[in-house]
Image: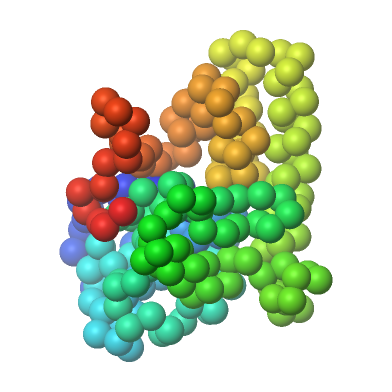
Length: 225
């Protein structure tokens, strides 16, 4: 799950839906949870649900979500407590992605962190895939979009092996933003820093987790992880 930084509110909103384009201009046209690219029908999602006391018009309570993640999440979280959120936490370090198991808590998390990661996955059904025992609904096409992107990612990686230069790294990054699913690109190109840096630069609003001189994760100042 890509960490994002939306910055300060550009306006004081009287209708939360009006924040959609401003949010997309800051963090891109992607679901903040499943990372699927969405050019239309993207929704402004209240992190802390309004039905549970969340502020309907607070910029810091907005993220962008696909209708599937937003619909599954609904009002099921009482507040922000007990989950990892891409706007305040180092979410790329909390989850492990794979083509087989899709998304799981990262290895090496503390017990409470694993609990938070699992709660986040379950909140929006991020691990729903056919024949897994956790089936998507007929209308949930996230897994189809993800499979399509994984095919492009694998092709891009094979092309990289034959064209390892800065210009092609930037081209891969542009391809990545067109197909979405940021975390799968990061997984495939792990250890190839020139491509990783290009992807992080191309995905607008990406917050890259910080580490100290010993390589230890620095807890993001805005969150708990």
